Amino acid sequence: MGYPPRNGRLPRVVGSPRAELSLAELTRERGPQVIVLSGPCAISSVAAARGRRGFVPNELQVRVDQVANCPVYADAEQIRMCPHEVIVLDLGWRSGTGSGDRAFVTRPESHAERQQRVFSARARGDGP
View 1 (cartoon, one colour):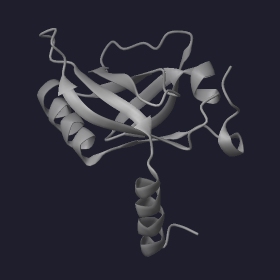
View 2 (cartoon, rainbow, N blue to C red):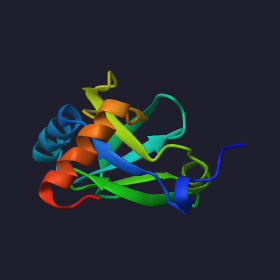
View 3 (cartoon, helix red, strand yellow):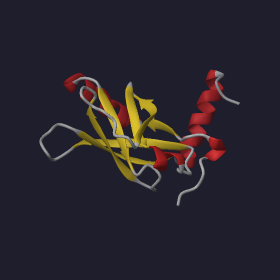
View 4 (cartoon, rainbow, N blue to C red):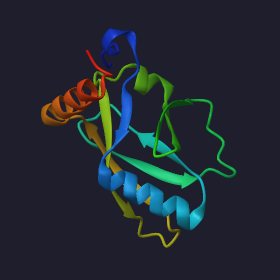
């Protein structure tokens, strides 16, 4: 069993600068992509980037966010039970299958990242 979502909301998914660069490169090379989270509530997990063309989410997957213009999908039940406010998509690398797909690590946002996000939002006039 997981925990109920914080404030009744699903977690946000954000990309680290390296992940966003990797997604931009992949999109230039192979066209629009989607990201599929695997076990988004774990301390760390893996996500895969796949070509958007022909991607059809299964009956358990829902769109939860967007990173670098790429829709993000996750298992509906797992993401609803996720205790994290923000999940970070990080460290994109090419899979070893020869397909050109990229894999990413997912993890909860650190306290330092949260502080930076809040202060940046305040500086832009977007935050509390």
